[in-house]
Image 1 (tube, rainbow, N blue to C red):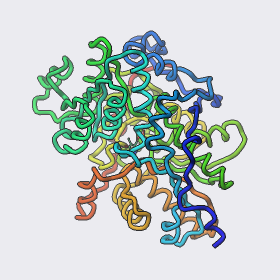
Image 2: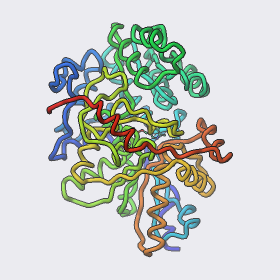
Image 3: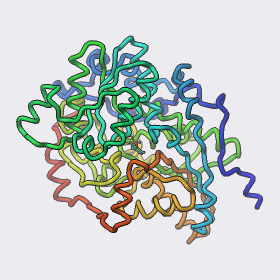
Image 4: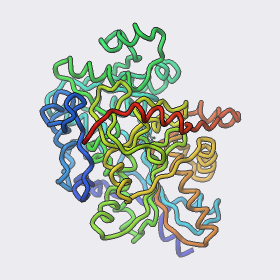
Length: 458
Ligand SMILES: *Cc1c(COP(=O)(O)O)cnc(C)c1O
């Protein structure tokens, strides 16, 4: 029982919340490719980005050389409301699996928004406030990002306009009401409040909307209203930077007990939680100081890394946003109705895409029924009701732990538990009723989408 020296939860003190974010790009030899202006095909400049994003966030987006960027006190103060987040040793899961593996997870669901997204929302709201802006606009699908952003905006007294995909607005009223509780205005998209929304409604009356369309509306409102900027909850370099707080805390907690993970696992939608969790570990790997196996887990229904192409593509379905070089299924690809809403993006962070391309990390895809099996197994022994997105990482962690059981290897596994699943109970219901299906795109479907990739000779 000497193993029990490591507590069930390793907490850090408030003083140990990181004082600076870590920017992985500073240690990358092959930097991620720049965002391109879709009109000119040239890298976007700070001037071109400033009507869309806050100035300091533009600077962070373009900064590929500064390894550490100070976290302003105002943001650290907010972090202390729900951070440091616990690093949990999954003793009960290990016991249940009868594995010699040692499993740890970093739990980011301990805040009202229920996910890691608040780590970047509060930073983005802070910089908007500091610039003297009136408010920000954004899109949300299932609502995790919109919820986090509305909390952050209410803290700094900023107006928050959220364009929520109409079908979610109607079918998922709960997150919508959380957002309104924090003072955000939530508009079902497409709407009559924008030119692009009116155009889409005229062309497709009765449409239930899409994320791409909601992005187009949010960007239009931000650029047309003085004092507003647009904010995004994943994919961008700045978001990965803010999320590095997850990995920095995890590493600090592990260092206290001389624990070194062999395998680090995270689910990947746009790549922000994974990029944040692995940041300091990847930094060591890039500098040649240590080695880790790093695994991105994605849904088989939306397999950007495992079946996508590494190419320049639009970040949105509406094809108005900048072009990013990333692993992509094509911006016209529409994944089947997977219940992990946060993992339905067609592309991937360009930083993670470059790292994957250069062999610094692996990727795997998992099917949704097996994900919910893992979620239920985890909930029953560890107590936490996991988000469907997070459960992709649980599935992969359990798979690795079961391999250790076969080989007898005592590997140390760290995975990111990004959030809770209280608003996803319809998905759990489908699973329990045996109504959940696994839909995997065919090669023909992917080829059709790849054929529409923009032609870029960068
Ligand atoms: C949004 C979300 C994700 C996926 O987004 P990433 O940017 O890939 O991290 C994962 N888990 C939860 C709970 C989310 O809300």
